[in-house]
Length: 239
Image 1 (tube, rainbow, N blue to C red):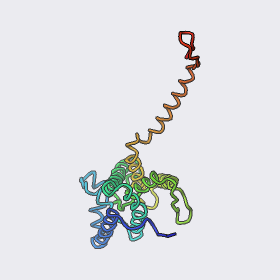
Image 2: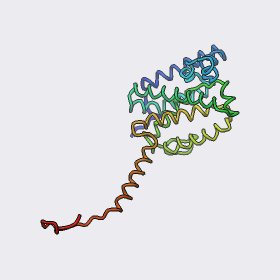
Image 3: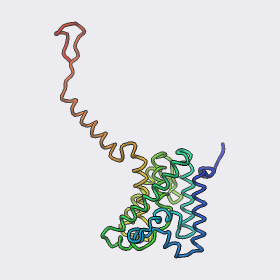
Image 4: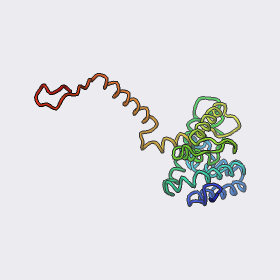
């Protein structure tokens, strides 16, 4: 019997992403707030000044050492196994689709006519959390019964773990408490789920299937089946 910590050695895309995030964090420490304003995701800058690079570059900036370490730890824990399953090309594409998708949803939410949206419109959002939440929903879809330790104490199946995180982020996004980019977190979850289920008919496929089953069952009741004999002629039986 052997024991190992975590998913094992770094895969190519995960390793490259970790190094890119660390390098950008060092540059961010040198450049200060000016680099954050330039490369962080500010909806006002994207909409009014057309700084269209921000939905990509914001993923490589972080608000502190703890923020960086948590995201990179999650990238290693969940990304390595997913990259082994999908391959490097699909994994990299999915990572950027969910990260950029989370940015688009963040900008869209900031345009809503609410007080919390007005605050989001001018505040930069940084971090890989949108893409990380995309990896979480992918992990839950591929390994739904794998236990994940919530707060490092309570083992929760991955499918319920992601549902709990989604509910928490939704409730927190209403009040926008703590300065955390909850819209980006929810965006990563939603975009990741839609991207992975698009080939299976999307989230409404199961409802459509159950509706068709119900209609078929109801229609069967209108027909009676009478088994007849094997004798020839019209009197052999009625079906």
